[in-house]
Image (cartoon, rainbow, N blue to C red; front, side, top):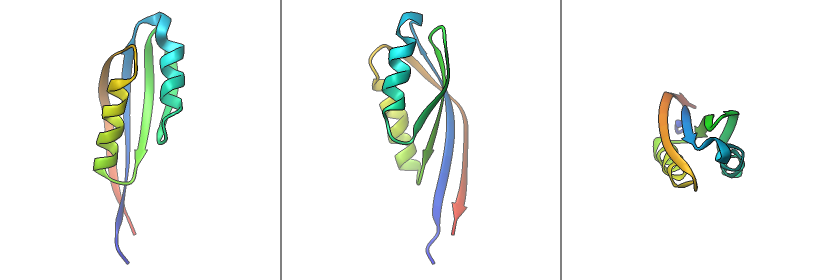
Length: 82
């Protein structure tokens, strides 16, 4: 049986405080991404992916959301699944 991977990462996403709710909604609409907290333009976001390339694509998508000022990675863990 071939092994696959499971990646989970977290980020702090920053935007102007008045854009926080709209940015959170845009991120929530993206598969594999979840917003856990939005407060005054700071969002805590997690991503789950099947491989590192998919995770990198999710990170790039976060950076292109309208009104996002910065995306700071906080945590990344990967485990092989069989």
